[in-house]
Image 1 (cartoon, one colour):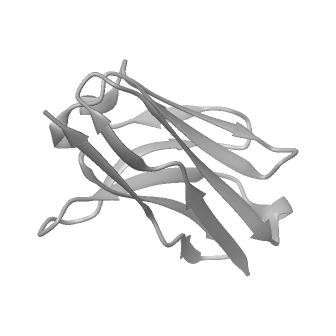
Image 2 (image 1 turned 60 degrees about the horizontal axis):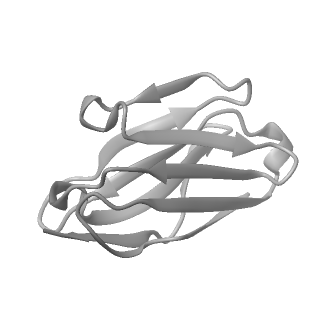
Length: 115
C-alpha cells in the first residue's frame, strides 16, 4: 500500500509560479515512477509529467519549458515546479504512482491561475 499527499496549490496570477509537493508513505522502496496529472472541471484527467527513480523525466507538450518535475528519494517526495503559469493550467493536480500492478492517487491540490 502507498499513500500520497499533495500540497502547494493555490491561487496565482498569470505568469506566476507555484511548487507542488507529493509525499509518499507506505511501501515506498518499491516505487519507481511517480507522476503528476491534472483535471479541469468537466474534463478528463490528463498526464502532466513523470519521473523515474533514476531521474528520467517526461512532460506533456504544453508544459515543456515551464514545468519541472523532480524528486527527493530520501524524503520520498516528488515536486512539480510550475513557472509562467497560464489560465489554462487551472485544474486540480494529482500525484500518481504504480505499485505491483495497482495505481495509487493522492487527493489532489487545486491550482487556479487568474488572467
